[in-house]
Image: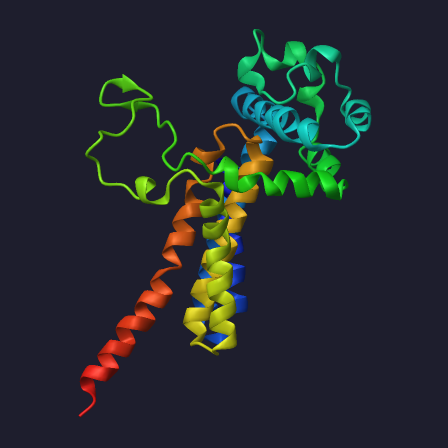
Length: 260
């Protein structure tokens, strides 16, 4: 549902290629080919420039500018000049287009004319602002189970109290979210130091790059709007990386049982 994630197969393919070498190149090639096909479809959507696609792109860029760029920049005047922001538009800094009483194009009149790269470059070219935006990512991942819309006839209804979930185990501490983001990178480093099998290294790097990549795409794609929902895959990759130490433990037990 979020076409910003279309480059993900290319990222995963690159991780497989770099992490596993020759042992995983066929799979990496397949992922890369699939990623290129997906990007080709997206380029086709951009070229057609339908009202729906244009509206989605304008909304996403405005959300990024209002909720991230204007919040984190140390030189708001520079951003306002570059994007042609009016006072009526900057009044919604820290919020998003859904808080506006009118369509975003009537309040941020230049939003429809921003290129895809212009707002991103204004953040990337301001390292302190970029660092502040990245520091907030773990907190944005909460709550673990975001509002998911219509649930059993109730809008934004929570899960039933008796529903098993890891959410209660993890709690609401942002340090847990940070630990989960770092986990696959630490496991990849461990695989590299211990000279694990190529497939293990490739899987670890795939989980690490996928987890970080999804979080970054969510941040740059739509700002902090519904970030926890847009970045759900980031947590999935982090938890999937735990299969590496689990397999290592099971393999050790199997070897112990087969010894005479």
